[in-house]
Image (cartoon, rainbow, N blue to C red; front, side, top):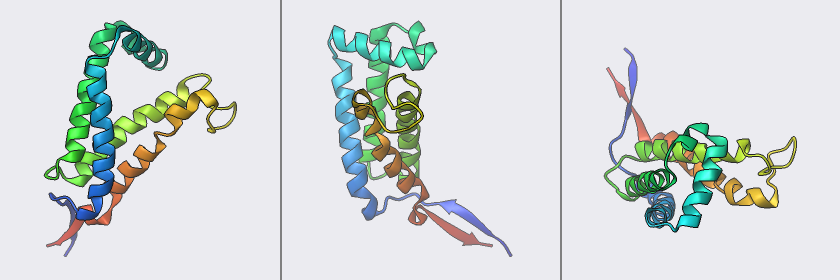
Length: 149
């Protein structure tokens, strides 16, 4: 007789504080990008294009609106209790992993031969907390159970 790991479909109450904190923060950031001013659009597009070359081919306002919509969707998934924690955590892991990659690959964000941030890199380095929350949502044994055959 074996057992199979199955994903649970409900959210644990213990996940709500971290989901609400990250979800509200990300939702707010996304809403701010939808109607961002021209200077902000230009800066965000340029910054992302330096690390992710495919972004350079996108029209700046389209890129920033798409980013904002994506953030609002992710924020909504984190805030919605009917979205399983493992699924919301997986989305957050992808998003925050992308931000950490941006931090690691952008020159001047961290000290040479170190992951410690420079003053310019602190704004991105702080996003490591989102990655930690994502891992806690995905890896929490409460998100899984064993089904015996």
